Image (cartoon, rainbow, N blue to C red):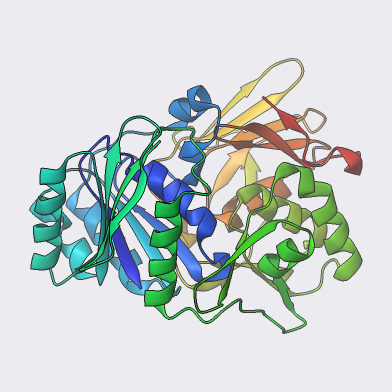
Length: 381
């Protein structure tokens, strides 16, 4: 089930999706951001000044659309949500062609009709419309035929809309139309299933469809960092070859890599949903002649900050020759940027500093490596 979320600018599409994903089955769901802003679920985190500092506004090229179309076509999950920009132009047609349905989120009734006409002209089926309204009083299901028609308030950044009738109805429609059958467990002894572990550690919320299918969303929070580390070290053998599923939060990938990586980092492999393959982290080459167009460094008397500033994706080919800065091994490191899970794990494993923090936009820096294990998950804002 591949579903575009579309509608005019400033209607709350990204906020709608950020709330909706918390009702999706984590192990069978993927979000694709097909616009130059590149915003993820983090865009709805509480500290909006920090979020705005991270946002990258960008234009969309023909190459971008080709890449997004390929991502949509190769996505394997039961439910794929595609967040596109607000301009209603023909360059979005190929994205609709690669999907089978769409949801319109709009602050204009007229634009709802225009987006429906555009989507249907590309053989996509409308499954829901959301008229975005100001205030806090609207959370209404107007009709369920020929598709779900609703009104919803509160689509402003930083708002938590859990408990919304509209969100619940849209989530159920997606789950039912996707054919989702229930929580899938990876039972191979060489698999590390972070969705299952999250459920065991109390990091999940569940709800049931009208035909009694349980839908679980696993959402790790920083206060679970030490518990995750303890579970991994108690339940698995460090340095053993494992396939890692479900490392969607980058800080979780760091905890897993540090707990299980061992001396040979290639023993563990992270599932990469963009390539539908497993990629092993590696210790990156360090040099004082690194490419400052890809990564920047700033150092004070007490700390070091590393920031990824490269545009575009880090692919597995460039990954083989990626060079990172030599730094003082005794200072804490603060890492920020947008990475695949296997790359951030590589970056973290490449340094032996006793304390390493990773930036979570809108929340601060979370400690992912600590000389005192009790401090794992510590947040600094």
